[in-house]
Length: 591
Image (cartoon, rainbow, N blue to C red):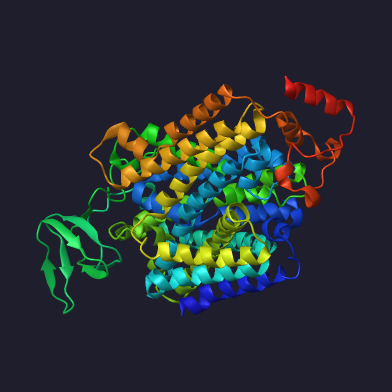
């Protein structure tokens, strides 16, 4: 019922809007950047719709349920990244005339090898970001409707790939802008209803959290992945025949696919390695990654990853290439900050209510579904079902909007940067990439969406952030320096994640820097990029390339993207206007 009521209309509208872009799509530029004719207001709504992924719509609230109030630093970093992008990246990237980040890399430094390396980085970030979108779609649909996990994953993959293959960036823009407004309404209205209906007792407990130690009522928990629990004395379950059975103390390995009914009033088992919602320190306004201590370091690590990573997210950067000019790109970034700020007022409300009404979700690792599970806890009648359906529709809109942009940059990296081809090859790459991500998402149910998305931000911060900042603002950057810095940042960040997954016996600050390596991987990439560049000499046309990035469109050298292409940035045969501004800026860059 909920699938038909909530998910089907979202998917249908997505496909219908996708058809709008078919008639206008004739070239690669049409497919990737919508012919660079998207207005700032429409573009900012599309950027916001694309950016507010499963990690924002569901993941932040789930992290608040599991880890506490300190998780609200994630949206702070997500939004602050656009301020840095507004100041440093937005307008110069649009003026570059590139279609993709690898396009810009080769255009700025004239290195095909750097272009291929940047395309590989795009694929890594895309997979880390796409898998949790599809994974959470499957999880949410299974929670609210009881369908198998793979159904939501398959629906997401089919809807996204079909929409993109039909309409490209133009279709994605309209879909994402529509879905941002849709998500905003469907996030705010249920939040207000929940606050009104939850009652004063729930609101008081939300303000003064109490550790989740006993089940207040008979509670059913579905374990979709295998889970290791520590059972205390006094824990009991209800057998299928209705009899109560005490659980033996000690370790309990719950197999995947199990449904356990816990007796009301019995003790709550502890999830191995996780503190219960409302435990000591839950209300502390700092993060604690994995209970390793050093909360200030953990908070700073997440802020570095999310803020600098936003500047390097390829699907966000590609959005600025759809603007008509650099000024429009800046206005897009400024409007995006305002739109995101409105949205991020509400995940904390869902998270705090979830810690009171659905704390049992932390046992099964399903806190990402807390948002859609809340209405049924407040009202088990038709009103609760209605709001569950609305939130499910909003969640699916979040999955689809973000997945559209990510799948577009992944397919662009494959068929525009690694194996250049035409429009037909782009469409084939879209379908192939979607199939690959679906296959990767099927066994990923046990991973936390917020963790995977933050890994994507960390890779972006360690690779593309140094490349873009130095490529835009430092004339002496060389191709060998950029290649070395990007490679070191990629290896350092991905290597740290791989080591942390193996759970090595490390504690304290070292464990935090393995789980979230941005505080050292980002400076390392900058240092390597600068050091190697200082050893060599910049290309003779680098001053001209920098001029194009920073000179306002109506005063800059004449350059036609449609005829020469972005790869000729800086070393094409320009005809330069002899204005005093051009000569002054050129002399400054040459120095």
